[in-house]
Length: 363
Image 1 (cartoon, rainbow, N blue to C red):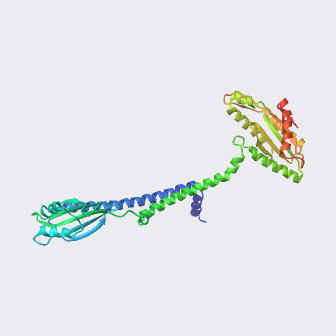
Image 2 (spheres, rainbow, N blue to C red):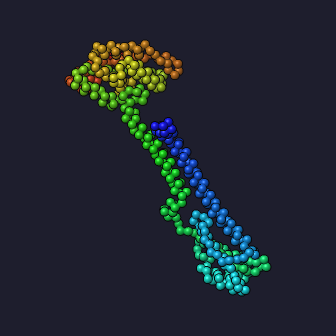
C-alpha cells in the first residue's frame, strides 16, 4: 500500500480527524451550492427589476411597439406574465378597449377610461384573487397611445415534496446535511460502542481504589473457590479494616478519609500478586482472595503488607501527618467443605479478634 493511501486510511480510522475532515468538506460543498443558489435568486430578482424598469420606461417610449406574451418566474413561488399589445389602427381608444376586453382580466369602467382615454397606468387584482396586475400605456413622444403593457404577478401552487428534489442546489444541500449527520452518527456510534465496551468494567470497579465492587468481588471469589474445588489447590481469604478510620474522617474531613482509603489500597495492591483478587466490600473494609497459597505463606505476605502500611504515612491537605494501621483477619478455605459466605464469616471472626488489639493479623 502506498504511503498516501496509508495516511488517508489512518486518518479515516480515527473518529476525530475523520469528523473534522468530512465536516470541513461538507461545509465547503454546502457553502458553494448555497452561494450558487443565492446567485440564481439574484439573477431572477435582477431580471424582475429590469422588467419593471422597462415597463415604466416604456410608458413614454418612442420605440417601435410589437405584440408579445412572456411568462417568467420572479421568485421561488411567484411568476410574472408580461403581455404587450401594439395598436395599429387610428382609433387607438377603441382598439385599447377592444384588446383589453379580449383578455381574462376584469375591469370596471373607471379603470378602462383611466387606461384607454386618460392614458394613465392602472394597478389592481384584475386577474383574480392573490394576483397583482399593472397596466402601463405606451406613449409616443407626442403623447399618442401606441399600445399597452400588462404585467400580472401571481403565485404558483404550494411546493410538493417532489419539488424539493428538482433543484440541484436543493439536492446538494440535502446530501451535505445527510453527510454531516452520517459523520456525526458514525462518531457517536464509535463513542457509544466504546462506552458500552467499557461500561461493564466501569460498573465492576470502585472509582476510588480501583478494587472490585462488592458484587463483582463475590463473583470473582466464588469462581476462585470453584477452581480450588476442582484443582485441590489451596486458597486463602483475608478481610482488612482500617483502624480508627472514623476518627480520620471526623478529624481531617472526608477528603482525607478518601485519601486514606486510596493510600491503604495502593500499598495492599503492591504487596500482593497480580493474580490475587482485590475487593472493596464496605466503607473502609477490603477483602482479598489469595489463590494457590497456603496459610503459612499467606500469613507472611499479609504480615508484610500490614507492616508496610504501619511504616508509611501521608499528609492531609492541612499538612498534618497521618499514620494508619490496619487489622486483618486471615483464613484458609476448606476445599469442598464450605462456601464463600462460610469462609468470609470465619475471616470476619478473625478480623474481630485482630481489631481488639489493632494493627495485627489474626489467623
